[in-house]
Length: 335
Image (cartoon, rainbow, N blue to C red; front, side, top):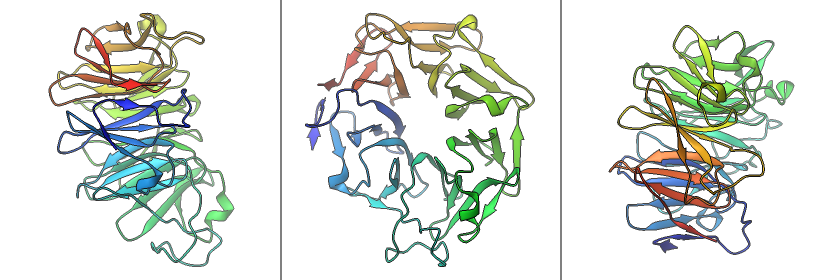
């Protein structure tokens, strides 16, 4: 379905959130929702993709594009990809199978909740899962890494069953050097340099991260559930909280705009919504400035992205998608 604005699909909860976003190489904006599938915006019209178009689930938490242009969608029931108008599921073997990790549609798929996905500079797809650790897909074969025996390591199909529920990977990003950074509830912030894993930060194990980005000067930023906004500068890991000017210690999303300013979304105060409350903070390198969410029905901000002409798009709970032109929020959703 193609629309100028998005209507809540029949039978979908009004509490459905816009959970993630991505800008592709052509400038199209992609938005994933927790129940209504995926929407692509080309600057004029929205195109809707759901289970009818091949998604394994309409509950979407991350979207990425690989170097070939394919779109990858992380759902609560596996990972899907598309080269055109329809999606296919990436089949992950049942661990009980003695077969190797080569992709085939002849074996049953294992149900895995995927929380984050990226395409790296070398053409690999990396994705993090709720209970099956970190994965790399090179286009032919899957490699699984888990936090096993007090360290991250590759596990094969047969040994993986011995490390169940080791390594909830909630966020992932590739830096300019090609290192793969990821956050795990098992041991916090880590990166993989292609040969070995490095754990970062003495207290990082206490941080539940919802999103990671690298800024233009190489800092790694983390939006965390309880520790506000965290920044790793290559040496130290520091937190920015409400006392520092961040709207809320329950941060949810991050985005660096073309002008270098970093936008932070938060989950807002419990029991509040709309009415000019502040669910967004902007950091200019020196100060945090809250943005009043006047015109938004809900201030629980789950995703932020910038379009090619400098507008900021914000996705919220209660099926809210808004465009901010620096002054006004314009809604593109109806319930």
